[in-house]
Length: 525
Image 1 (tube, helix red, strand yellow):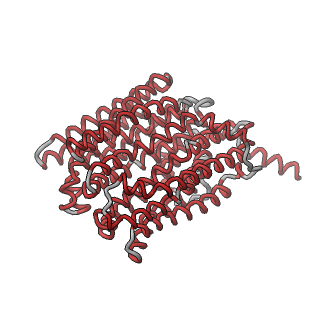
Image 2 (tube, one colour):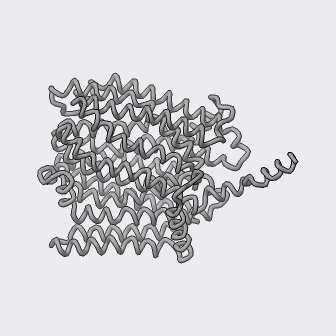
Image 3 (cartoon, helix red, strand yellow):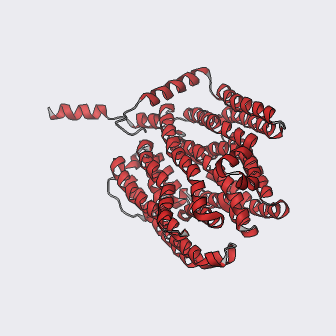
């Protein structure tokens, strides 16, 4: 009887091939993407609603400092030197192979590495906070003590940021996106609600930053518990091993370069503007750019689902990668292009409704300019992720090195010549160039993906022309008509170009089934 029970359990367990097929399937990709979109999108909506309240509580100058402080949190991601991304790829590649037995040691080694790097970076940031406030930012003397304290508190979150990235990477490798986002959504909401509540009790920039760090600490503890519960593959003998450290550093060399430079490119323009412009102008630049950048959380969510799927399946089931690339691009275009068209066509009205006419007068042009560029920035996430997933992170790293050399000086020159609108132009030009170059390179190095890359490229060019038409149409009535037509036409064109009829029908069935499931009893993987 025991033999029969054991045989039934063995028969019920999926084979290695079945696990790989499931983790690189369109069904798994669709479910994971929907959860990631929800997890990224809900905090974005809260951030948009919270921004006017925080500006009212802090004032324009302190809001600029708070926004820069949040940007610093984003740059802390570079402290792990790409280990978190390398960990995700390494775990995903081992699924269904004999090497998967070493996953616990790999995970423990990666987590120990990022914690050590985060602690070192946080210590350096704590010591450098007074110098940064005095030398890099135009901080009024009255705000200096509170700002120094805020930045020092922020430095303490360095280990927390990198630990959360590593823990998320472990969940992502095994595509436990449902569980990860059920935790991430309330944490993302608290990331903006907690500072508002703290400011109602204590009117201090340092207090608002402390609330952010406290939320990060809670997130770290809960994420560790979630990994232990959701990924039984990592519950084995977990210890630091030099062999696994060398392995992570070896496969993460170019990933390290990319993950070090990517946050710098994300926030470099803000700090350049902060160094060259008064705090009020920094607020008028950072606020619309931050608004636009939060929208990129949606394609980042899609890319986050695509990355482990490509890493798991590109060698054993390469035909799946092309389908996932086209489906992911369609999701990005369908969700992002209408919003981008609205920002380009009616950025002035959006800013007025959101933050009032006075603030909008100095920031609406920035929103309209970067609103067009962000469409390309969103679309670029898919070829970038695919290149990394198939084992060519060196290409993305090389492109980022070039951008690191060219982008900050260009922002500085255009800011001096044309103010914050000039910085916005450079931001958008970089986004367009980055997207088209990545698509071209992916088509060159991955011949099997060339048809999909060609289709995505045509959609990107058509979208850019449509956005240009929205921007150049003069009369408000005609501009509204052009914007609405573009917002409807480009997603329809993408659906026609990127998927064949069978794939469209299959994707629609998957979306319908996913929405109909009101009670999910297991993580979508």
